[in-house]
Length: 274
Length: 284
Ligand SMILES: Nc1ncnc2c1ncn2[C@@H]1O[C@H](COP(=O)(O)OP(=O)(O)OP(=O)(O)O)[C@@H](O)[C@H]1O
Ligand SMILES: [Mg+2]
Image (cartoon, rainbow over all chains, first blue to last red; front, side):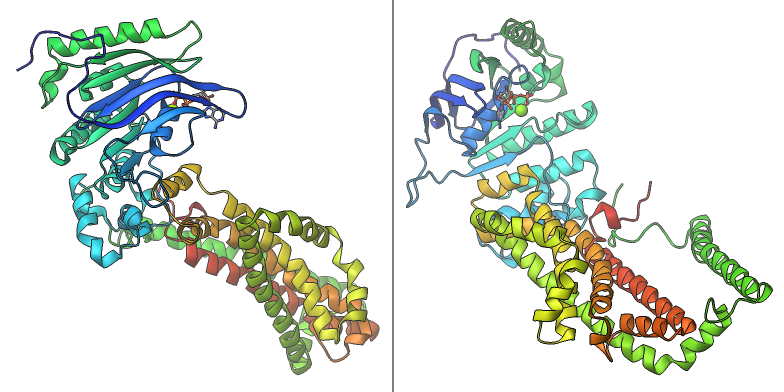
């Protein structure tokens, strides 16, 4: 099943085509903080890419720039295979999962998941099946009428994931989606994400603080350092395509965790926190 | 948890005997305690008036007040209708005007910069001080009173709604932006629902203020408000040393205030009961 602990430290490029390419991206906030400095990043189709790094290294900023929420101060973002609309902006199909579930408390689960389609002008009746299918994929079909306050933290996160996948996005961006959850729920949702990725053929960019989570999930890990935010190392995870609890105890997993840990520690200065 | 509750707003299971009993006890306490206090105060009042032989034109006993309330019901109730009509018209206009202006001000920076300072000035100037002017300029006493009540009611609704429209979760705004929501979609699907709890808090405050302002304006109008609202009747009773009628009018005014507050709370509860903390039946 798993090969030996072969963890490439150089940028071994996957062969699949590029979905989005960031080249020399800098981001300076109005208060003078240099959040990103010369970020080069290619996201390839079908890969699971994790951004890992100490707090404040610009992971969220990078993700938001990819999503089109906030412009880079300099540098370019290209969507090589994406059509452009009349105004010249790319018609990205993106799903975004925030660190908090970010649900509308006044709307039930169905209406929350319907939202992205509703904003595109699709009526409730015409998309009922798609919404229910998305809820089914995260195992919450029977909770369509429940309100967010009636759900546990993990269930809210799953609603948030259903909302991100209901549009069938080309690219899924997740910003520490499981940071606030307990380990058991986290492991379960990790497996859910891997299953959905296999099922739906997603490309994922995933932000996390956890070395173990990143190794378990990713095909490639980008380790970043802070002040200024930059990429220090890219680690390709040579794991099986189908991952389960066996993978968590395999030699490949352990060896990769060690490599990534070392990369992370060398990236962290004295004042950095995970 | 295996199945979702189909009616998420019911608090607990009514068939559960200990829960039911606790709930009934709570309800009885809620009614009984204030009632006991009321009876005690009435008895004390009655005893004081009798024991010290207080003249009815100084302090009438509760019995006399009650019989005056019944005897003068015709005059008092038609005065009450006038006051209530003014209060509710002012409240209605303030709700419509306040929330529309709030939306306008949050949609356009220019509007906010232009109007908000003046709304504040209007609010901080005591209404008693402008009422005489308004009474001179307004075409009729009724419309002057209405205008005063409107001015006072308008601001809490405006400022609360503005605060609500601006306090939308930043991530939700990003989400709407990400999915290419139009200005109108963001307003109707996100900002207005998010502002509801604030709006209703403003409504509760405004409802109480509308009645107070209507009374104050009627006082300011004085005898010019002949044949008008309850406040005028109260003033009139004072001139005539008809203190028991004054008390009767006062009781009707506070009852009206309580009903307005209760109505505003009810509307707020009905609108928010599915989701907002302020209206939730907590189960822990
Ligand atoms: N809106 C903003 N205005 C000013 N500075 C900002 C803003 N957002 C982020 N920053 C700064 O940019 C840097 C990167 O922030 P970012 O949120 O991308 O970090 P992060 O890697 O996601 O951190 P964490 O892991 O703690 O979430 C930080 O130093 C932060 O203080
Ligand atoms: Mg972050």
